[in-house]
Length: 410
Image 1 (cartoon, rainbow, N blue to C red):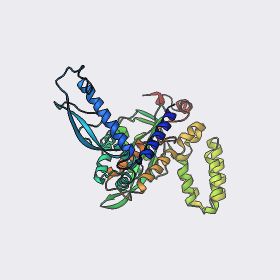
Image 2 (cartoon, rainbow, N blue to C red):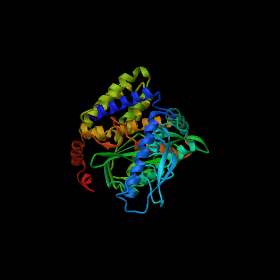
Image 3 (cartoon, rainbow, N blue to C red):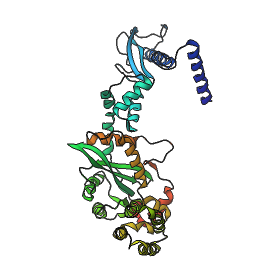
Image 4 (tube, helix red, strand yellow):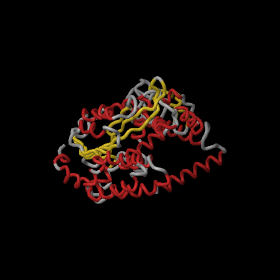
């Protein structure tokens, strides 16, 4: 019913525009005329309610206050700038809500700018877009000030209290170009947690000062402790040297699981492309083995086949083995949660898309603002980093068997 009505209204608007020779869009377009009419009607309805009687109807008047003409205001809407008449009252007590006094933009316009900024458009891109599509001349300084509205929100987000226990936490870092004297690649550390209700959430983001390092991870993850995280059962991470030990210094009982995807990619860096297909097939049989005993046998077969040709690749696996195999003790539903940081990597892909067009950021805060907007705006009909974990009840039951009271302690 609603869809048919929308189509009928759209057709009537188009027919009216054609019949009168007026365009739908543009400075004198029909859509702007309608927007002007709707806004002015809404403002007059607000004043009716405020005064207690309608225009021209004196029977319900029980106040000395009354209408006192109109003022004018130009506001920016989603279809461009619209000049409207704002009704006034004699004693000046009327405070409109639809178009607040001195407002220059209608609610929704700012959010549209923030959304574009979070999708990777620069202030210059947005300025051009608004002018070409909406015929709105908006300065780059104004666009920056609009997007800065999220800074207070981001500050609250980054200091919010966290759960006491997280069954699973995944960590990874992405490199972003930030000016620090000169422009340099700086790591942004990201931690994603799955709580006991199965809700995924980005727990924190921190901009590092140099290259990614285990000590730096400890420094930033200490923030999670300060915000209430006392225990983590499983931590999925990449194979950064010293990282497992560093993580256990914060949460001694946490099992550290190296990300299999990172290990496979690292393996391929040592090998010729002609062998990638064979190697990935063999590695898949290893990380999908039914248990650690079968896994060990398959790995030794893999080592026998490739160690002479690629000794560094096999040495990397032997070095990582202790932190690679923990997930083999779990059934498939748990393995999917912990053997890869793919969820963070999909988030990183969106981060890269949002940062690529900017070249570099002038400050840490400017970089974090864009990344925060990516998290803040989930994609429709897509798997997002935040949200409910699929088949969580089954996974929770299995985790409870292994971790018992640690999972249930809140």
